[in-house]
Amino acid sequence: MLVHCFAGCPVSDVLEAVGLSMASLFPDSMRSHHKPGLPYWKMERLKAKREHERAVLVLILSDAANGMPVNAEREALAKDRIRRIGRLLNE
Image 1 (cartoon, rainbow, N blue to C red):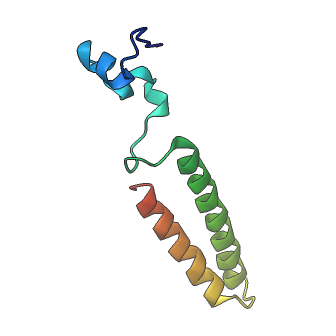
Image 2: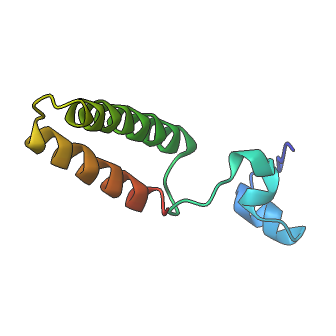
């Protein structure tokens, strides 16, 4: 939806006058359940980082299951990053 007032009114005023909000201008697929103010692109980047840390954790646990030495510090770091990203994403 394109909203424009040729008199120079702010978009928020025009939307309010017709009973809409800024969220009404965007499809549901662009909205998500995340902290207010967290941009969509940042949310996607955080999800990618979380998947990377999960892959690291899987490799560490696989090594441990095969009797190989593991880096406990890196394992703890991966778990911490996964938890922190989950909190940022409100999950």
